[in-house]
Image 1 (cartoon, rainbow, N blue to C red):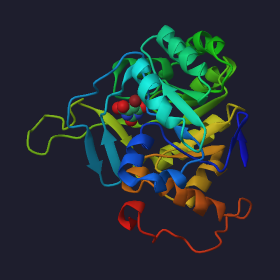
Image 2: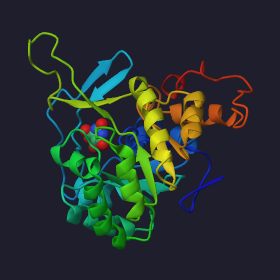
Image 3: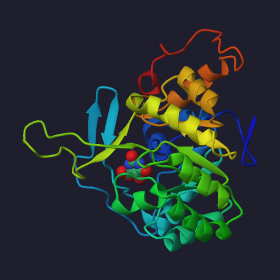
Image 4: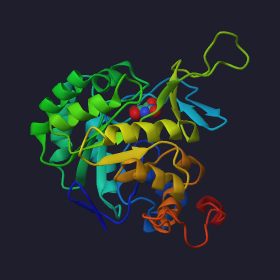
Length: 307
Ligand code: RRO
């Protein structure tokens, strides 16, 4: 058992927001996935006050070492989420962290107040770092804006508030320090790096409907390590580290760089049980020596093929 902001978790591996849909996973893979839930806490996809359609397609581009997404935050909005998703997510065997975003501090404050009042919700994550909607980046790119957001949001709940940082700014560590100074309980990083792909058959046109998107997967792992280390040197609050984690070794590296928890994102698209495998591998790496003991189960077929 580990303690994260007063919440007891079975192990250090959680999911990155928006990379694992627990409700869809249960539909697709049945109760087995939920009985052996891969993560020690579940982080929701970002919720906004009003429903959103998301960006026009195409929304994904596969890279040699990851992908670019331009999803654009489709979601049911606060009312739809409370009515339809929360009753299902309360059945999960792990604590629920709800990720929220707004284009103004008052919107985020309303979301935090609404979710903070719900017993099903263990913690809030503030998404100030989405690369795919224009308003999302501003608050998280600037320490002063982040401080002002925390001033509006902190009084709304006593529950832990995690601030999800963007790598697309001059100094994620300065933003993290501002978040800590204004009451954040933890920070998480990295969200995706802004990137672009050209259309393979139409010269000068971007492939993604949103024009640009967010790069994730192994391609960003080294960036995540460097930024987690930099943030750890500036803040004392817990850090959720993520970026290209595919194995227990990658998770161990982020913990060694200063993270307290590790999130798995893109890898869950290949195998929804990747988080469970990574947690098991991490448990077999000695934290002091770095030595891996026991057989790797990397060769085990993904859950989708075993059914
Ligand atoms: O929905 C998205 O396009 C999205 C979000 Br909210 C985010 O935080 N990060 C990302 O890469 N995509």
